[in-house]
Amino acid sequence: MYGKRYPDWGWCWRCNQEVALLNATQISEMPEVISEAKRIRKAEGTDLQQAMNAAGKARIKHYEETTGCKLNFGDEEVGALALHLVSHQTRNYGIPCTNCGKLLRSSKASYCADCGFEESAQTFIQDRNK
Ligand SMILES: [Zn+2]
Ligand SMILES: [Zn+2]
Image 1 (cartoon, rainbow, N blue to C red):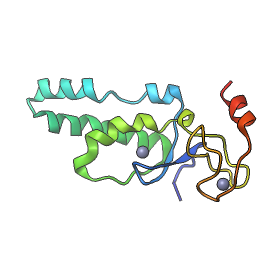
Image 2 (cartoon, rainbow, N blue to C red):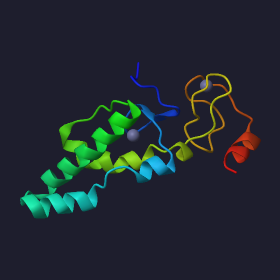
Image 3 (tube, rainbow, N blue to C red):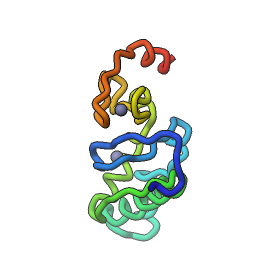
Image 4 (cartoon, protein in one colour):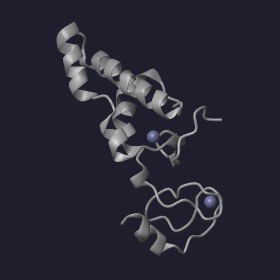
């Protein structure tokens, strides 16, 4: 379904799809967007929008290739989407649902939005964040 299966997946409200979640190291390894856009703009004389698109596409491509997670987006949102990718982080999500195994949609969630299972697992949440 997703091509290469990645360990952590969660629902992203913005992307409106299930996405691969990264850890802090993987986030830090993503190609730069803002500074790269500035560099492209200077080197090639393109306008900011085009430079953001070029830099944004490079980050999105990197994300899709390393995770196997294909994102649905339009050309006009490339820059914004690229910056948003830092939100695809495991630590923004909760523990896996006891019932269906999907990550809860936030670290404060007490029920699973996917299967409706209710978690009474505050302690698990605390353990996981240690
Ligand atoms: Zn997203
Ligand atoms: Zn569930």
